[in-house]
Length: 360
Image (cartoon, rainbow, N blue to C red; front, side):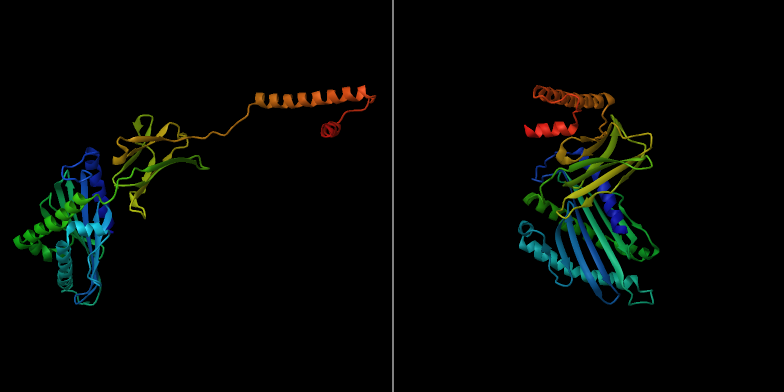
């Protein structure tokens, strides 16, 4: 789906910049050097009516706002977020979102104007991204998708709209017009950049948390060894995991990754695995984890548990001690029987030893 592809691309793009500025604190009170603000619009409707229209707002991968057409209320995840932005800003933003419904309905009516099936439902998704680094704006991006397929994309670094399907040509003149460009730039500054800065200056959206790392090794019946490294419970989401053998980064082997996935508590999870050839048992491998809360990259070794094997020497020694102990016990009992007039010609059995010991 287009939304999944976009989020993956944003996540990859944030990794390299974050690693360059680990530990930086901005002068404006922003607690981490790199932040991103994502606003996602989703609309379902026909040319004549909207069945659903909702917005979800994320700051550094944590939801901060939501809105839908049924209650027409802008709801903040935490009360302090509304207080940080102010009642006037919240009211203005809410009215802007109500007005967006008319804009999306106009888009749908124009999109299906040449379609004879006017009552067919269509889904329109708009993804808005803005990023700051050290409190400076570093990029904006807008992508529109229709019915799960890319429609058009604006990357301000490229400075132009990319048309993905012929139907988008119908809107190109509007998208590139001076009036719409000016309105878009104002919107991005006021509702994407400025909103993000106000929230971050008031307080961090949540505290940073280092990852909990688990490394395991599993050997299959076909001789293939699989190494697994899991990092969970970390925030923010930017993290790098890779395998190394000795001091060399792994470039061979069948490696796979789950990607960065959200946990229920707004932290994140990632697992990487690697399949080794039968001749490689996984000795001397480490999982290297790089996250802002770790300070420097940490290595987590793969521990191999070998089965415990007793040597013949140890086994024979234990057996000899047991025989010696039984011999001493038998000699003592024989001496005692002789002393009391017991015939030595009668064999001493293990049963005799046990009964004699129980008697004492």
